[in-house]
Amino acid sequence: MPGSYITDPSILSRLQAVSAAASTGVAAITKGLPPGVAAAVTSAQVLATTVASGSIGSLGRGDVTGLLAQAKSAVGQATNVISVDKGIGQFGLQPTQLEAAGFLKPGTVATLKAQAPTTPTAADIAESQRITSEGGSITPEQVAQNRSINQALSAPTAWTGKAGINGIGNLLGSDKLQSAAQQGLMNSSLQGMLASGIATGKESAAVLSGLVQSATRLGVGQLQGFIKGIAPPAIAGQIAATIKGAQFSTDFVTQRLGNFTNFAAKAQSAVATVDRSSVDEGVKKLVGDAKIPAPQFKPAERQPEDPAVLGIKDEAQALVEEILTFLDSVKKLADVAIAEAIRLNSQRPVTEAQIAQFEVLRERYRTRFNDNFKSTYLPKLESLKTSKFDPVREYADNAYATLVRIVQLLRAISDSQKALIAQWRADAAAST
Image 1 (spheres, rainbow, N blue to C red):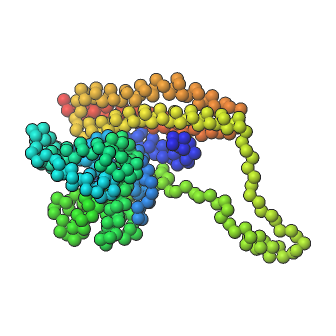
Image 2 (image 1 turned 60 degrees about the vertical axis):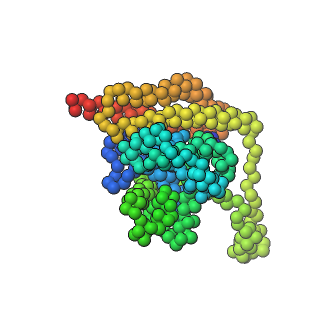
Image 3 (image 1 turned 30 degrees about the horizontal axis):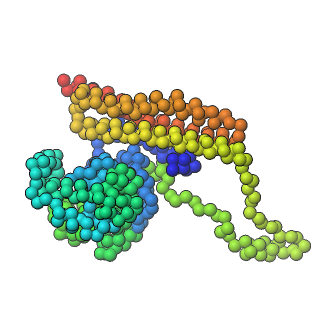
């Protein structure tokens, strides 16, 4: 719920971290990947990833969130895309994985494979050639089969409804559902490793992260072959790269983002957790005089809030949620521009025509923000800061501080992209 950001003390520090990452984004992008780590995660990628819902073995929520960011980075595909080579969504989910984890009904993939065409079309052959030319590996027959299976997954009857996933449509349309599915696969992989004796679940995060990520991506059987030294060279190379990337992501979260993120569980209430009778008896023995009455401990009485204050706070909460929803829509447009900036930067030199197209994407989120935030939302929020009720003013001040951080993030992203454009043009000028 967007309003929960205001009461979550970690949101400010997380936004500060994203702002810092965005403000130095040009240097981070142009510096390149750490040696030996393919598709290494960045601060912005980790902090833009839906926080893991729980731990997996010895991996805490921060570790798991880092692995989710790493998995997305390795696939390099948008949330709403399904492809014949990379799979489903941002994690490249495979139908066989989804069936094994209980998201698809048992026997679904086998049935769909049996129904798939055996002769590829001209389009299938062309797609296979395109993917192969870009460094992938898939036959025309596999393209035909995968295309047929992907199309068939639109039927809700193929899905079990687990985790709220009842069709390919709502899975592709939800970052949270895909994250839940990926975490489900990670948990299933850990259970498979426990059953086969590969892992105990109590290994250090540096060790378990690579095992879980590899087993999730390539399967427990392939990982077992790798450990025994009998995996095919291609599989062994993929597992080695996956382990290195996973270890980098957990180290990155711990060392680089430890001061900015708060993945710990919220503290539980201490109310009614003490045996009052034993404490009272101890106090009596300590005082040691029957003439001195022992203190009587009672729960603090909370005065109900003024209904008028509650009404205004509800209005303030609704306004803040509306603003956060608006800023989230702006951030999504900014994310599109960020992804395009990274893609273009990997293909340098960048032409002036490409820069012009990129500037259109950059201007989309800037215009949406400039046309609405200052004129519509900011005056309403500032009026709450002058309320005659102290609780409302305090709430508005906290909300304002949070929103300022988000705005700073958006501006930092825009400034970073502007500097990147200047660097692209400088490169082009130097090469002529």
